[in-house]
Amino acid sequence: MEFLADMMDNPNLIRNVALVGHLHHGKTAFVDCLVRQTHPGMRSTEERDLRYTDTLFTEQERGVSIKAIPVTLVLQDVRNKSFLVNVFDTPGHVNFSDEVTASQRICDGVVLFVDAAEGVMLNTERLLKHAVQEKLAITICINKIDRLMVELKLPPQDAYYKLRHIVEEINNLLR
Image (cartoon, rainbow, N blue to C red; front, side):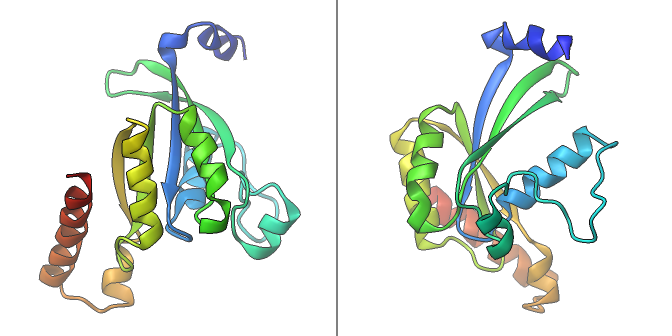
């Protein structure tokens, strides 16, 4: 805990990142994975998976994030240097875009989540344009790649073209 407090005193070691993307593109599940990887001793005693950032009863009941919730984690870069990373899990539903906007205002960058099977959605475009407007660093995470084979039954070559199309579409939006 003292290590964490010392890191908070050094702004050069703090990063603020917003996870943004369309509804059900995997932002909350990604945060859950980060928490489980950085805190291996924390395991849910319940049968269902615990959603660390869906803290409101309504969020748990509906399976949809409503509020942008930050999670602070100590993560290391490739040179094993530790950083304090405040990860904001933002809602994907367009009705809660004010939460995303507020989160982006205090962040250094965004991770834009795109479901590989659904591709770039209208809300994805809007979120990307807002990140550009805020002059934020943007990282793309194409998520749920397994859906291309399992649900869409795409052969490997077609899956590759689908992923390439998503990247090209995002690049065109950035121009």
